Image (cartoon, rainbow, N blue to C red):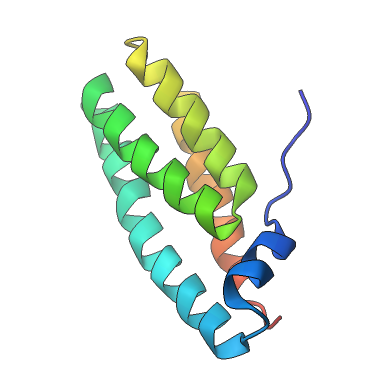
Length: 111
């Protein structure tokens, strides 16, 4: 299985149409929202609640894929699928947390 790129910069630039101020605003909004969803997914995993985990992972995956955070989106989609099957994938949650930190750092870099 190939690893998705951390950020699909073409997707992000397409959303922003070259507007750097808009890119910064979108990145900031995404990071704030995604942090909440990562926390919700982590809490659901700690509580062994696959239903809550599937919900948090679904929202996180959608937001990540929309902005071009492809690796985070892919991991969230995998966590959602496993949670829907009744599995709390703690290994994926740890990876989601790590990749979210990398994504946040990458999005903070000037374009």
